[in-house]
Image (cartoon, rainbow, N blue to C red; front, top):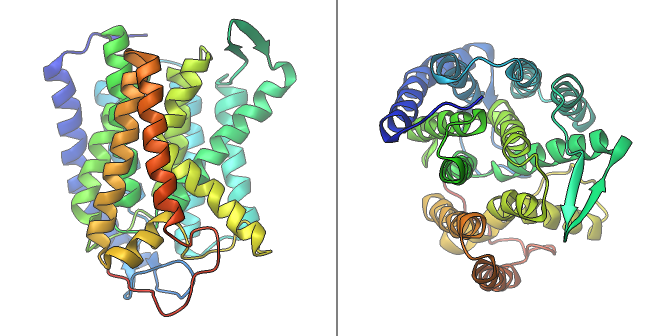
Length: 353
């Protein structure tokens, strides 16, 4: 179901979701302190030096629920999405209070993906490549579940510095909302959800940008990753080469960082789930010596890829691919100037929170 959305409605949706999150975060922060959902410093991945309340993603989730009931059209398709969201929120909350093992967390991720695919019927059934239609058949559900779980973990890994995950996902939701709105001039379920989530993430950034007073925790990163994948499947379910490239372009940085992490840990003979400080944002942090500056640089990189994505979806694809190639070369140069794939020398860790 689509409803007409004008500039006033867009502003209203974003503003209400922003304000509701701003109101909810202090409440969730107090609850997190009382129940012991505190993120304590360590010497593995975390860069903050003092204990910080976690589970802030619950405020984003509650704001999303409130604004969905307020603005979104009634549809049976939303029920399995919400059930899957509840599953991943509960998984994240438990992990924020008492850390789960990687396998336990993976089970929660798979269950939420199963709900939205099997019960919700959201899946990548076919894809059209260069005029040829490919039907995945029985592989449609495994491929879709893998996609959802992969995106959740990519966003989870991106949540390594104050404001990084919230800002990155805000850019994604705004980008997909722009593409969906311009393409149809209507407000489909995917567009409305993107506007709500963008406003909610912006509201959370008030408290989460450096120096953060609360972290979103796995409650937030897993939920946002889940919603990113679901929105992608809803908005680009008519799978063509274009529809697959756009979400990948928008999420290029966190996806590539995840692949590099897997490669790096494989080279070192470590588990994929092992924590480290060799992600792209950690490498940039060592150079800038400032969390705020590092996060802003990451915002700019993500924004550039998002702009190319919009141009690709709505403009000249040849020119946009050239621009994308230029960005890719620049990005590779940045990676080569860091130690992201290999063990970095000790004594260079300078962190700020």
